[in-house]
Structure formats: structure tokens, C-alpha cells
Picture 1: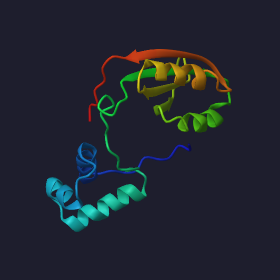
Picture 2: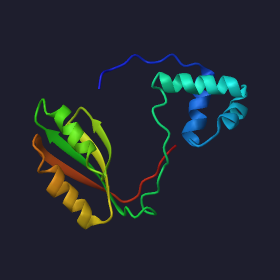
Picture 3: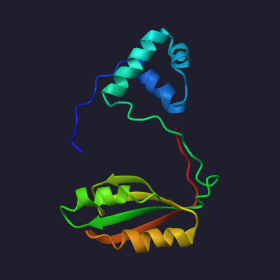
Picture 4: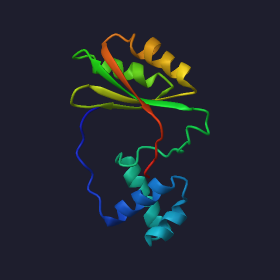
Length: 150
């Protein structure tokens, strides 16, 4: 991923982003009412924010437990230098991997992995992650409870 310059945002943009972060299904009319701008203005702002890549997608937030994903863990990876680009695409292909971050520090990558149970979680970690070319080491941190703050 290439680094891009930040998009200049004003207070109206930030309020629109805040509203849509709270409820991505909110209609343009509802956004306009909450932000106190016209529907046409809200529509053009949302279109601009989407076109400039500030708003990247609209999605549903799923309760993992209610969706049958009863076991979650953060898994850290130490990877072979220069293997990130290939590894990133392989990680994206694993349905149980819900978040991927390249980081600095004692490890190189951190993943949020969600599975139906600990047996399935073990399968993902041992059979898929640890066997990937370029992965040198993993460490697993079980999640006992998580809370989305948005």
C-alpha cells in the first residue's frame, strides 16, 4: 500500500464521518439533519469523502459471539524480511483473519483471528499461519472479552 497524503477535512466533514461511523446505514437525509446541512450538500460531501478514499466502505459490525465465533485471539507474527507483500495476500485469503496490521516492535504483524471454537482457532494458527512461507514465529493472545469502542 502506498502512503497517501491526508485529505483536508473541515468540521462538517468530521461530523459526517462521526455520524456514519456510528451508523453506516444512516440515510443521506438523516446525515444532513444530524449535521445541519442540506441533503444535497450532505450527498456531495459523502461522495467527495468516498471518492477521495476517506470513506473506504460501508459495512456491518457483527457481534462475533452471536455469529458463532466464540474463540478470538490476537496472533503476532515474526516474518522473514521482504516477505510482507506476498504474506499479506495469503493472510487476506484466510476467512478467520478479521484484521491485519504491519507493526514495528518485537514482532512484525498482528492479526485478529476469530474462530468457531478453540479447536478451529488451533487449526488456523498451527495449520495455516505457522506453515506459511515467510512466517518465522507466532505468539497467540486469547481474547476473553472485547469491546468495540465506536
